[in-house]
Length: 432
Image (cartoon, rainbow, N blue to C red; front, side):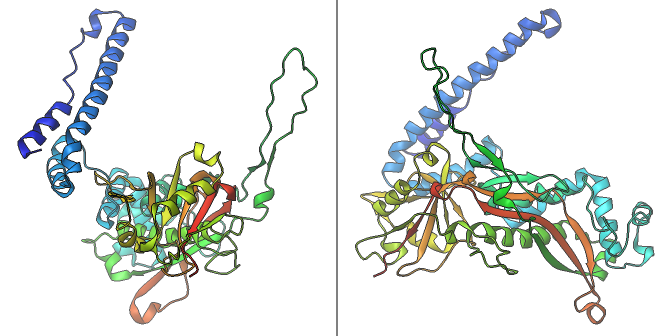
């Protein structure tokens, strides 16, 4: 397909304009709704049909190995046709945070006042509004002294999944003040009751308990050094950068708890066990002496799919893999087809053996004999509970006076917990 044919195919996919409906003031409300819904339905059908035509038109181009040329052309014209796909870049994350701050002046003013208060900035560097807010702050270890108000927490929590692999798991928000999570520990059994067997069917009751989370959720804490001169400089704003620093640090430990934690009760694992370290998750070992990630074959990944429970495959499933394996897995082929396929459009998932991939640095990243390469399964079979509560306080530790820095401690409560290990499987290389 030449460039001219490509753009012709692209134009054919663009939906026809919606027909104008009769002025709503001149028709009955019911008739007006019928017209609008009918037009939307026609547009949906037309879009699906043209999407199929577009894919069929592009198929010969991709089959001839001109994939790179197709991607280049598509990326060049896509911004003019559809909104840009969300980016996972650091710049995009900060831009999104800054946008939320700009759209909520009250939240921005509170956070600015809080940072200046925690870093002991001179009163002359507070605006009038910030001074009024600062006078309402509790100090020291008083209850609620560091609590971030509910109108400010969305700026943190709505942006937290930006880099987080835990966002693909069974995320459960905990209400403020709640540190335990109820889970289904035994699924109820259902049975048909017919006229002939009424009263003869023995139903097995299910169980909703907190037994799998008996202990209070642990706390994730991070320390952020903040420069007083930067805060006091009215020409600079560090709010978005501060928020990103807090979220990056908290996410790193949250992902560790979900994927690599081995259950040790320490500052790294928090007494939690991740998917890759869970003893009850089935492990599939590659055969045939395939001792490296690059030597794996399609059948190894297929065997991993077969190792999870049948019920798990009825739900959305995916892979979790360390990014260092990308360059090795992308070389694996099944015949002429690559086992790992890159996304056609920026922002979409990579596909491995037909299932989406989440790249996470919290997964094992060591290549070699007997090493864990990937986890596959149903994300919601692993629970990550997170309290919608954030605490910001001053920390007395650090370099402080000699460097004109202040330390701010950010904490939140969360817990990672396996719900159904049979819904996952781990792929390992051969031992030798």
